Image (cartoon, rainbow, N blue to C red):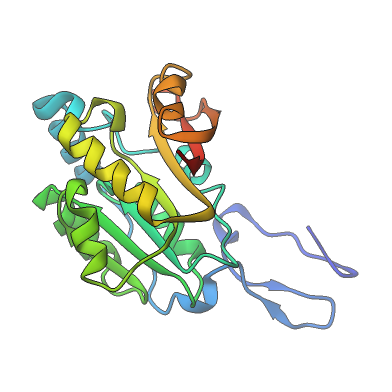
Length: 232
């Protein structure tokens, strides 16, 4: 890695440590200055908790296993971190995607992570409640309008969804997407994971004018992300 005229070799376990510029100034990775508390790691027990929920509830849970780092990074890859003021995560699970958001979160950005399942909420609060500008909310996605209105939020720069949106009950899905339509800023993005690559493109085009799909092979199972802009 080149930093000015100084070549810095960063071992894999130290990738998130500060880099050094040519004049000896420490350069922090995006969001690092705003993370006074280290992120608490997820455990294998939490992964099996996630799988157990999938086995009991089926398509109400988007995946059999928490998203990989590759999937999580792809899901948040369209966020404009310098401009985003509010990010809303829907269906945060045990925090795989939440973790990657928190790692990049800027001081001027608020993250609201919404999760309905009480066991998952307990995990999320253990892992992230110490972090500035992060709020974990136990609620249903259908109540998005009420939740955000109650916090004085009128505009959202990015919605990050770990929900099985096409499979949600119609009343929940329609209420959630109506809120997204009302709140998403011009140029903002709604990104939703899927484990069925390419299948739901026409579904998302019913609600958004600009829909693209990003394949993610390094996930269990392989899947991808629908990135949607310009609500209809």
